[in-house]
Image 1 (cartoon, one colour):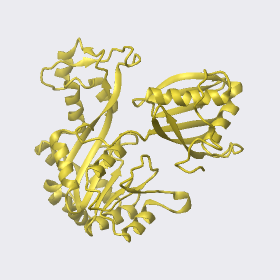
Image 2 (cartoon, rainbow, N blue to C red):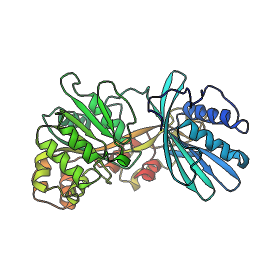
Image 3 (cartoon, helix red, strand yellow):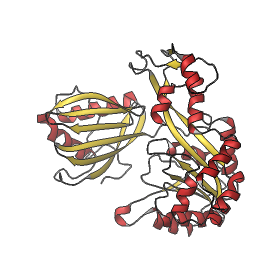
Length: 399
């Protein structure tokens, strides 16, 4: 596997050439990479079919067909991808992972490559991570002012545990890195444990998890605690040992940020209990839980009033408002959407600590959330639709 910071020299030929699909596999591969970078794709999927190699881009979270390559080029094309990612071109039976760097138009992309055997040959997926994107302020991330304030207060507390939940691809890493950049880098030691390291930051120490050699979140976290950091980012709490170590770190004077895969913010609490965390310890350590999703943002150039706004608003119990629908134009390449918007559910833990310590069920926690008027993800999504930022259909699709 090539070093994560390698340039496209040596084993990785230059990707400056641009060619139309159907020609030389090397030039075609390079052209597809640049097309994906130019369109803002987050992933490129090369899917072998019975009669062709289908190339698709993930744009704003949605898969779009890009081109089909002749079946005769499939093996040569995938070999080019393996060489580009520093993988073994002779191994076709087992999955492989690779990495490379692409520079295009002043931007620098870290690429994550993955192969997997299928019935029609190997599939190849490339993740594009734009390293030129700066850390965003909380308002730019879509957090409401009171949500941003709650997160900022939790971040500037002396210690404790902050959890962000959501599925893969919901933007958790971007939000957590923005949170870290809101901290005082000069007065604190900040260290992250990530799998993988997606974005590099000069002011933060970062460690990449490598489970194949035994460097798991738990083993890395145990070692990191001996280095006396002030702030820790644990990329994901996957098992009981990691959960216990995160709690211990939060209770011994560290600020710990981590993620879980749950449907909403409060579901993180029973999930941690399922991982063996004692309720009284969780109540002592927890400072804030939040959930996040990404919805597509309406294209401002072509969005139009929905002809059935009144009926839809009434159906979803919204106040009378004007809702919009996606249309499609040249600016958004006919999709009707351009970019994505994060919607959040942010819950400070203070009011919930007695219930957490008493091992209260999720229904009681949810009832307290409603009484405290913390908007749920669904309510936040409907508010974004009412503000003309997205559509009700898009919110329903995601949630």
